[in-house]
Length: 136
Image 1 (cartoon, rainbow, N blue to C red):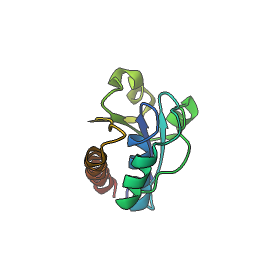
Image 2 (image 1 turned 90 degrees about the vertical axis):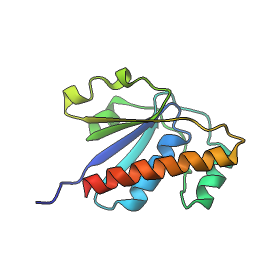
Image 3 (image 1 turned 180 degrees about the vertical axis):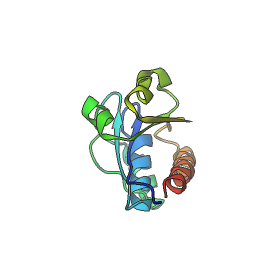
């Protein structure tokens, strides 16, 4: 029996990098499932170097940062905290409402360190790949 379509919400602190990268990679790999992303705080515009490095690695992040809403939390079947700077307790009720909660603990990048940006994108690709395989 095939798994039904899942809706994934990737969450980081500002929705400027980690959650956006996870959303873009997930949606590129998956046609059956759908992802969105948000920050617990809506951040400033995206960092140009992070956008450029991601694009070179085949990941297009371009939309404006979004703040997390209760509507988004209700929409998603799986909540993924991509960030290491958000306490799991902030989404402690996810499971109470029938949502799966995953915590990846990925650190944020210093905006001027291209090597660090690439490393973080690779970590996110790995985690998204594992999640995608599990959902197939």
